[in-house]
Length: 165
Image (cartoon, rainbow, N blue to C red; front, side, top):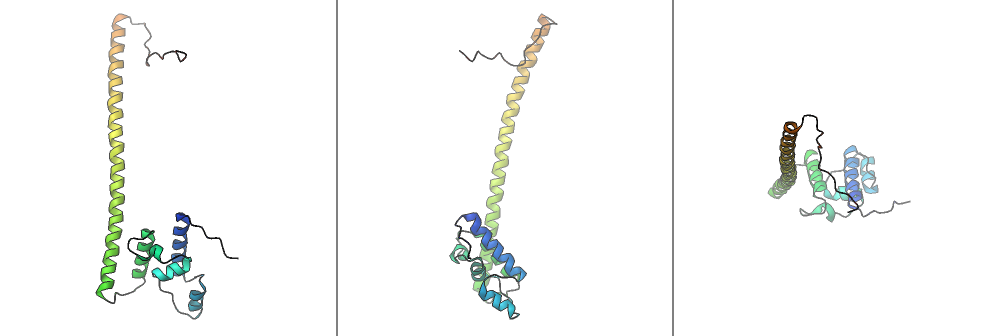
């Protein structure tokens, strides 16, 4: 019984990743690729074979500006690692474009990470100044109360107003 198709991006992404792993391990589920493996041939890892093995449309990872650029980059890296030698300058250009796309993704992730830490730092500095002000006010209040009477209890927090008011 065929499995039901899920259109959630996470499931589609996982289908592609599982297909890459099956092709790398030499255990494809697609009937065409199983026949090749039975005959002793290897199945190349490329965009077409991964999309067939995943049972998904090739267009999801086939173009540079696709829906799943991380999967596309992974497929291209696996294809390169499997020993596919570029046949023409177009292949070299495609490989370089893939590297550029990967570096752009890494740069955007690094920028987002830096922005997050900058926001956290600004928030910490503001909290520090707030706490420092509270400390200075409390210190002055304690000193004034000590001068007035040494046995008087000092409230650390301002008196809360009556909630009924």
